[in-house]
Length: 231
Image (tube, rainbow, N blue to C red):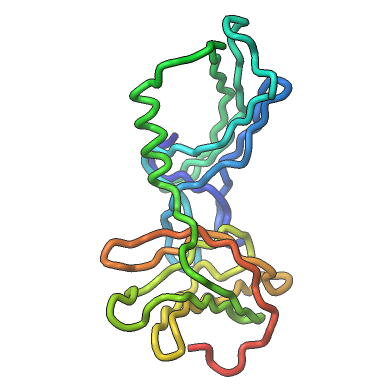
């Protein structure tokens, strides 16, 4: 968790940032999966734009246990992690810490209300799975995200894509939202620093309904040249 601005990944080689990382220290047979990121915010102004988190930040990760779990009363199980992060305001300050949690082995346990509430709030901050059909078409200059969304009454007023990958899109450039007879689509400028056209796009899509919604996106990019202006 952190106050001020927690910048969770670099976005553009012109912008500075470092993603929080965790080196997990768990007993044999236990495993921790990748972190789940809350919906990000956009910080900075062109040409230095980055995405991050602020306020109290909770990152969720799934823990799997061995088939033969420790017997009840056999002693605590220690889960540890070596954490690194970057907190920014006017300047960015790196931090690190070694943390550990001892969990007792028991046949059953009553849920802790405070912990249950903490996890519920953290889950509510995650983006939802993409609920509509979508496809991506790209060339060296731009990527166009086509979405199966209404374009008349009830249509979104706009959209914005927070890309999770470095050197894929131009994070400082405006993104164009279009909804007309050709359908709903978001035109995202490609990064001028990309070594090759993007093969896949990952990140979070914000769709502007009266109350914005956030969808997780992970789609392949169709390798074809866009004919004419995609708008």
